[in-house]
Image (tube, rainbow over all chains, first blue to last red; front, side, top):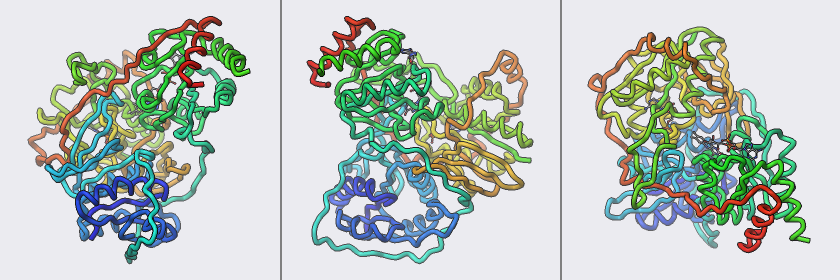
Length: 317
Length: 252
Ligand SMILES: Cc1cc2nc3c(=O)[nH]c(=O)nc-3n(C[C@H](O)[C@H](O)[C@H](O)COP(=O)(O)OP(=O)(O)OC[C@H]3O[C@@H](n4cnc5c(N)ncnc54)[C@H](O)[C@@H]3O)c2cc1C
Ligand SMILES: Nc1ncnc2c1ncn2[C@@H]1O[C@H](COP(=O)(O)O)[C@@H](O)[C@H]1O
């Protein structure tokens, strides 16, 4: 029986989970199983290192993924995995907490690093606390030891040739009292800001949605994407939520970040800390973002931005 | 008509945390606040009560000295507060908080809708809500951006990874709310004065079963974000100097 489990919610993130999952399985000396409800991905999962795909039956109409919780819990009680890793998507976070509760297990949320401590015989996890002011190092006391992991924390696991794995079909009837009446798609950013070399980030210093055009122009000029702070995506709904940068949004690893009218609260800064150069425009010289920036202009972005665009155009010409 | 219970946590305001020597967190001069997104849970409880009737209360698990949080929460509209407290209730991890709250609620507090924030400002584990639902064995709906009550059901719009879902569930139910669900009110002087007259029901730790932790904190250190920060003026000369610096860095 596999001692390391991953929840294979979507293929891309599952393959990232496999990188750390396989490493842990190697150190513990056990197999790796993926819990899946998508038979079409089983071959891919096996090719990337999964030993056993535990396959759940499709959902009936009106049911959502939480309907699988009882079956996953029941199986975990039989197989007794040592470690259970889940991608920290919205759904993943909900499922992880509910499964952990039923199994009376410890769960590290949104872990940035995970390693196996052979002495403790336990997973040691690092995660942010106090909005990103602190890093907390924890270990799980119960079993399984559970963790949710943000997308792109790990590189994808390589595809191996000629791997064999088994598929175990579970014969269960998933059910949840929460029924889905309607689904609405949300506006999505087509390009992924976590992969951009340059990110121009707009904050509440922007007065109206039309003004985002200027930020887009700057981004276009230097080959970048436009991201935003949480109020811009979530309160104003001026930008799609997958462009929000920070603790509850994306973490970027860009070469250059240009913040326009961003105050620099810790929850936002946490998402840009891995950026090589942080450059900002803010009219308040006491804004906290100045302390976290490499270069800053103290000024009104409505004056600075056009000037900046002009200057870059000139040096590029 | 629903009995509504909003859960809030009284937390250290992270803005007051300083970095001490060797990346130690310096908590000597901290102040406390209601966890930011729990204000949305309290506000939503009050709004639902205004719209659909019933009652609205708040509950918190904390240390006996956390009474300032109760006043703050009550000034935001709820009728009463349940205060689950004990000197040992500091640095609880999410499974402990959920277990204590579940036991406190189970036999003592009437509820049809329990509201939680998206995540607490200090731990941001996003666990206590869903764990509490499991402990109470009630349906759970996470990341709600709209809630309605109809007969014995709730109709909720929730965020999912690829969009929104409108879902329905029977009461009693636990719902975690997304911060865009409402804009929390700012209590006035009258609200603050009124809050001291509202009832606080204490539930002592000694009335509850002890719960052991499922996570152990090995250490917490500061995550320093400081950079050298060169400032330029907002005029033509400043912009020119900035662009030059960025070119020199090879950033543009
Ligand atoms: C648990 C939790 C998680 C969170 N997660 C995130 C997250 O992932 N991402 C995130 O961004 N936030 C997050 N937040 C919110 C965060 O705390 C801040 O509220 C938010 O980042 C502030 O956004 P802002 O800088 O756009 O707005 P504000 O704080 O309002 O700042 C606007 C800034 O613009 C400046 N300004 C105004 N006009 C001009 C002008 N004309 N020219 C130049 N400058 C101007 C002002 O001086 C000010 O500094 C989270 C909060 C909590 C509690
Ligand atoms: N000590 C507490 N007392 C009351 N409610 C809490 C407590 N801790 C967490 N909660 C609730 O659970 C939510 C999620 O917390 P967390 O799992 O710590 O992110 C918070 O937004 C609160 O609504």
